[in-house]
Each structure stands twice: as structure tokens, then as C-alpha cells.
Amino acid sequence: MNKKLVNFIVKKYLRFDKKNPFISISAILAFVGVSIGVMVLILSMAIMNGTAKEFEKKLFTMNYPLTIHPKFSTISLDQELLNNLQKEFPHLKFSPFISSQAIIQSGETMSGGMIFGVIPQKEALINPVYKKALGDLNLDKFDIITGSGISDKLFLNPGTKTTLYFTELNPTGFSMMPKMKRFTFANSFTSGLNAYDKAYMYTSIEALQTLLKKEEGTFDGIHVHSDDAFADIEKLRAYLGNKASVVGWWQQNGNFFAAMKMEKTALFIVLMLIILVASLNIISSLLMTVMSRRKEIALLLSMGATSKEIKSIFLRVGTIIGFSGILTGIALGFIGYWLLDNFDIVTLPADVYGSAKLPLDLAISDFISIIIGAVVIVLVSSYYPASKATNIDVIDVLRNE
Image (cartoon, rainbow, N blue to C red; front, side):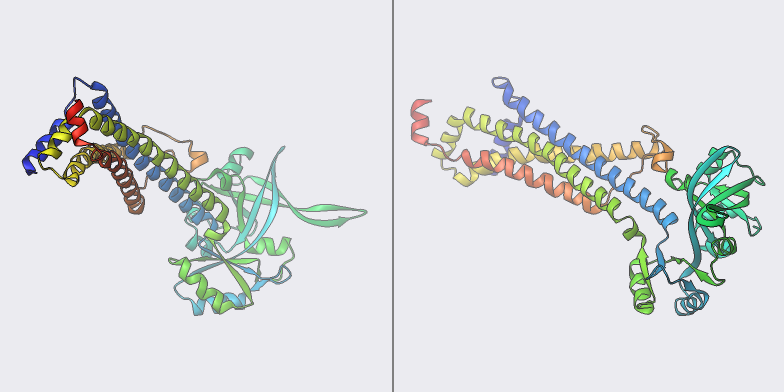
């Protein structure tokens, strides 16, 4: 069949059919549905990725890339091990700590949380949030830095005296009383995550060694900064052997990120169904076109057109509708991405999500998956009606129509 004739027939079938307007309306709905489906998928995947990376960045700061713990609770890490680690891994930064649960009180107001005893200079090297709060302060032994959630709740100002109660008990006569100590509030930090700002406190490592009766030069653990945590965790494990265990930040929050990944996958499948439903309109539109053009198809076959050529005509009509929808959806998706990224159209509660701006980050792998999925659905939706177009009894159609 002449190529120009094929192109002419395809263009004819794509024009609005006034005699059978429902066919054209069905094709338009298919185009719009595929466009919206692709656009929503692009924006949804970008938001899911952006949110996950934003949380990852916040958790990475407060949870540290790697943390070394003693293998048994009765054993503590010591200064000798810390010195050996610093010599063996000069590219890593180490910050030893002692931690304990504590209740902080100012006036009649109390708040519970976790307190870390750290060496300020070492902690500042691996924790930018703590470094910003520390600034140029020269902390005394019993000075304390708290999250902004705690300082706001207790109305703390620099120099305010506050009392901390620890879970360790002191015998007093015939009863046990929690250990308590007066601290001086030095400053507060804001991590961007409300959960940390309402629960974390920092003081000197010497303060907790004294209060918790820890031997000098012993620690509960060591925070480690690494630029390649996935590689360094294996090196540290091999070096430490049975002396201590090493935990990565992704292991400490494994359930959270696994849930986000599952949610992202489920959302992808659900939104891909929108494209699938829209593609059903391609099937219905092409099938109605086949039924209304039976005489034309029969004439083409009687004039020497092959079944393959007839099939290609309807396949091209379906793919043009579908691919036009995909391209339009991509364009709309990126326009929406640009608008959301540059204008505060959607704002989030900063204390919950860590940022008031909607985080966006479209991964190339997600974009390719969206395109491949949409293309496959469109091709499958176009192939079935195209194959039905060749199942026509030419003699019967020409005799009766």
C-alpha cells in the first residue's frame, strides 16, 4: 500500500468524526487520561523521593553515619581503642559519647529526653547542628545545650539554672531517690525535626562520667563521620572484630525507610492504573473506529492491502493518541515540578517535615520506569483493536454494507 495513502488514512481517523462524535470523544478522553496519569506520576515520585531524601538528610545529621557500640552492655569502649581507631582510619572523624535518659526541670515545668555527654571539639567536627549551637562558647563541665523544643517549653535563657534528674538511683535512708544535678543552660539547637528538638540534650562527657560513676576514659559509644559509610562500616567491622559492633544510620531507621519505599511502590502501581484505565479509552475508541470503518477496511483488503498494513494503520492511530498523551504528561509534569520548586504553592508544617518547602527530587530511574510503563500500556492497548481490524470477512462486508 502506498505510504502516502497510509498517512492520509491515519490522519483521517484522527480527525474529529462528526458522524460518530463518541469515537473522537473517547480518543480525547484517552489522551487526557494518559497525560494526567503521567503528570501525576512524575510529581508524586518527585515528592516521595524529595521527602525521603529530606528525612534522610535530617536523620543523617542527628543519627550520625556510623555508631560504634560495645557488644555487651557490661563492657565500655575506652580511650585506647579510640586512639587506635584514629590512627588506623585517619580519614574518619570520631566523637566518643556517654548517654543517659534524663528529666530536665525549670520552675514547675519538666521535660524528658536523652542527654549525651560529648567532647565539644570532637562533636562539633561531625555534627553541624551541635557546631552551630556551640558557636564560640567555652562550655564549663556542667553546662548544657538542649533542643529548641525543650528550651521553648521550659522558657530557658542562656545562664538559666536548671535541674536534671537521672534514672540512676541514690540510696537515701530507707528509700531510693533519683540522682539529680544543677546544670547551666548555655544554648539551644534546631535540627529541623521536632522529635529531636524536643528530646536531645548535650553536656560535657566529664559531667556524665562523674554523675553516672563511669571510669575516666571510658565511653558508651563512638559516633563516626564517614563520607562513604557503606564501605567504611565493613572496614570498621573487620578491624574491631569481637571488640565492638558498628551500626549504620540506615540500620537505625530501617523500618522507616522500608515503609517509605513500600509506600512509594504502592503509589506507583496505583497511579499507573490511572494510565491503564485511560488506555481502555484507546481500546474502545479504536474498536468503534474499526466497527464504523468496516467497509473501508474491506475495500482496502480487496484492493490488495495486506493484513499487516491494516493492522499498522490502527496501531499507529492508537500509539499517536497514547504517545501524544505521554509527551503532554511529561511536559505538564516538568512544568508542575518547576512551579512547585520555585513558588510556595504548597507549604508544609516545618516542625513535622523539617522544612516548610515541598521537597522535590525526581530520580532518573523513576522517570524511565514511568515512561516504560506508560509506553507498554499504550502499545498493548493499541495492539488488540489493531489485530481485530484484520479479522473481517471481506466478501460478507462488501455484500451487506
